[in-house]
Structure formats: C-alpha cells, structure tokens
Image (cartoon, rainbow, N blue to C red; front, side):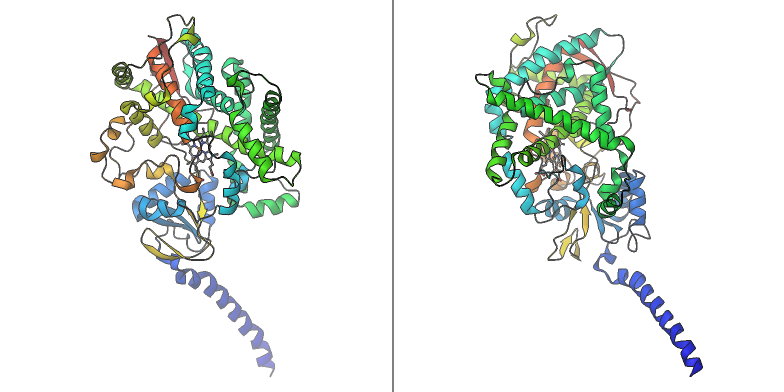
Length: 520
Ligand code: HEM
C-alpha cells in the first residue's frame, strides 16, 4: 500500500511529462503543415527562430534562401508560411477571403482604423468605400485641378529647385529630393495646392526634421506591436512600453502636422470662390463619405477617422512612391543610353516638357496630356522595371480563412488561421522565373510575348492584387511619368559613387543615393 502511494504521484508525473512530449513533439508531426518544408529545424515546433530572424531584420534574406532551397511554399513557424509563386499562391491569398492579422494595428492613426489597417473583409469594404472613384485612372486623367497642381509643382517649384541644385558643388541627395516631391504632390492632391505640404520650397532642415520623425514613427522596434500584438497590448496595460522613447512623440508630431492640413482644407472648403487647384479633392470626398456612413458618431470621431485614412495615403508617398521614384531616377542616371532613349521616344511622339533656358517663365512650358505620356512604351518599361527592382520590401501577411482549410502551392489541408505571406521583393527576384534578376533592364518589358521564362509567374506585383490592391497605383503612374519626362527633357544626370547601395532593400536617411544634374 505504501509503495503504491509512493508510486502513484510518480506515475502521474511521468504521464503528464509524456502528454507534454506528445503534444509538443508528436502533434506538430501530425499537423497537415508538417508536409510543408521547414525553413529551420525548429519551425514546426516553435516560432522562436522566425521571430528572432524578424527581430534582427533578416527575414527577407532568410526566406529568400529557404525558397531557393525548398521551393515555393516554406514553413517559418508552427502556423506561419511563406509563399513565392503566383497562380497557386499569391492569386489565392490576395484575391480575397483571407483577412489580415493584428500585425496591421500598427498602421492605425489617431486611434482609428483606415483601409490599409482594417483586418476583416467587412471592415475593409466599409473603409475603402469612402475612396470610391477619386483615385481611378479616368478621374485623374480628367481632373483639371490635378493638371494645374502638377504643372505648378513641376514647373513652378521642382525645375527651379533642380536648376539651383545643379549649380551647387555637392551632388543631390535623391532620396530627400524624391521624398519632398512625392509628399508635396500627394498632399496637394489630397488637400489642395494651397493646403498641401511645401517641402521643396522649405529650408532643408525642415524636411530633415520631418523625415527624422517619420523614421522614429516606423522604427525597427515596431517589431513588437506587429509580430506580437497581443503580448504588446498586455504589457502596455501593465505600463510597460517596448517602443523607444521618441516613438510616441514622433507619432504625435506627425499626426498634428497632418491634422493641420485637414483643418486648412476645411477653411478652403468653407470659403468660396477659390482657385480650382486649391480644391482638396481627396479630403472633400473622404469627409463627405465618412459623414454619410456614420451619421451616429460625433463630428470629432469622424474627423479622426478621415485623418487616419489620409495619413496612410501620405505614408504611401514617403514609404513607396518616394522610394521607388528615387531609385528610378538613380537607375536612369546610371544608364546614359536610357536617358537618350527616353528623349528620343518623346521627340518621336511630339511630346515636350522643355522649360525655356534659364528657367524664366517655367510655368508657361508645354504640358502634355496624361494619356500621351501613358502611351510611351519605353517610359512604361522603365517604370515597370524600376517597380520590379524596388517594390516594397515589407511583409503583407494574411491569415487563412477561419472556417475552412485551403490548398497552396500544391499542399493541401492548410488549416484555418495560418499566417501566410508573400514578399514582392522575392517574387520579383526569383531566378527561376526572371533572367538577370539583379540587373535593371527596361528592355525586358518591351516585348512581353517573349519576355520571361515564368509567364504569369513573372508578372509585376508591385501594387499587390485583389480587393486590397493599392489605391494609389494610377496616381503613382501619373506623377512618375510627368516627373521623369520633366527631368530628362531638361537635365542630364549622372550618379555619384556607384557603389553606394547594394541589392538590399533600403531607403533610410543613412542611405546614399546621390546624383548630379546638368541642364541640357
Ligand atoms: C510606387 C508606389 C506605390 C507602391 C509600389 C504601392 C504598393 C502598395 C501595395 C503592395 C499595397 C497592398 C497592400 C496589401 O495588400 O496589404 C498598397 C496598398 C495601399 N496603397 Fe499603395 N503603393 C504605392 C503608392 C501609393 C500612393 C502614392 C498612395 C496614396 C495616394 C497609396 C495608397 C495606398 C492605400 C490607401 C493602400 C491600402 C489599400 C487597401 O487596403 O484597400 N499607395 N500599396
């Protein structure tokens, strides 16, 4: 009896230990995900390896290497997959039906959700509805207000700015130039010419200050709230903040800066008559749509919801448009034959954006129609190739539907609520689908029939796809074409220090992307 009494706790202990072993060791082997090749030996058992890799900012290179070794679907953590194929992966994941995880809460502003940070399909439809029509290609091409804003910004401010830069002994920092121009154009379209930002005209220190706040807002410690949102929220409730000191201040600073533009746009809307280019086209639309959708809530809540949506568009100007534009100018500057070819194409199409020498009467220079720029094959190829080389490098995670299992890249029964992600950066650089992946070759887009080995697999996916596809795609195409044409019909540019960046994703203030501009 005494022995039995002694043994029974021991037996219970062994039983408990076995259950734990069975749960942690055997159950991952029984999961349908066990068939998916693991990027790391521990990926099936624990998320620690991928969290550690993300924390160190090494996810892109680790996942790239894993796909090269293991194929188009790899397991990063127990319920965490990476996909690198289009038809059997990206098309299904991003085509609708896969919601977003808590990762995107980080992109709420003023405490409010916007289209980008809305998680469920239902919530997304509600937020995106407010933008209906304002960014479509036809709305942009027909907008007289946008034509005037673009003309005034490019001829009245940008060309004189570049002329001044061309006379300075030091080269031009392309990132700062591009961020300033992109922010000015996007905020002017949103809030009107008079109420938008004026970075190109302001002293350099002001732009730098803004960019530094931006970098602090999107600092690397955002890892915590993106990757471990629930843990981070619990710690916050206990008064523990994992973000660095400047993060909250910079968020507030930027939100305040943005709200001032909303207030300024309200003043313009309330006062008539006005210059057509001062019309806050996007702000007016989103504000009116918000008021219709939520007549129950307070005006202050509506105001914050509108500002949150527009903050995200402004962020698109810095985060993606600004970055891609800087690299596009850099690539063209590095390839003199590309500059000559752009000029030759413009001459043969009878298009000119030539400013009288010396820059006087710049605003009287000819303004081609957006549709004429849209039809230029070589310029289009330059844009596509730059977007291929320099798309966003951040993850765009989704979760598999909660009510059913799915098949991806030939693997079946992928369980509900599994995180799945595809990196644009990787699919655009997959050597099995693209030739000379690290070389900037616009020519590859000129004859799409014999373009690449991969067919649909080697399509451009820079703006995403499906119902959450980028709302700013046509605006980006519109302004980038005008910017490139105005630069390369008036200047010749050369790069400074060819080795200043590699093939890694970049764009921080420390990166050196410099060029010299000389008037033609
Ligand atoms: C080179 C320029 C740009 C690129 C490559 C780009 C890329 C993208 C991508 C890939 C997405 C999809 C994200 C996802 O699936 O979760 C996206 C969403 C979005 N982009 Fe852009 N973007 C660019 C410029 C812009 C600009 C200039 C704006 C604002 C005017 C903008 C506004 C948005 C918005 C609002 C969303 C969220 C759409 C939604 O979830 O419904 N983007 N962008």
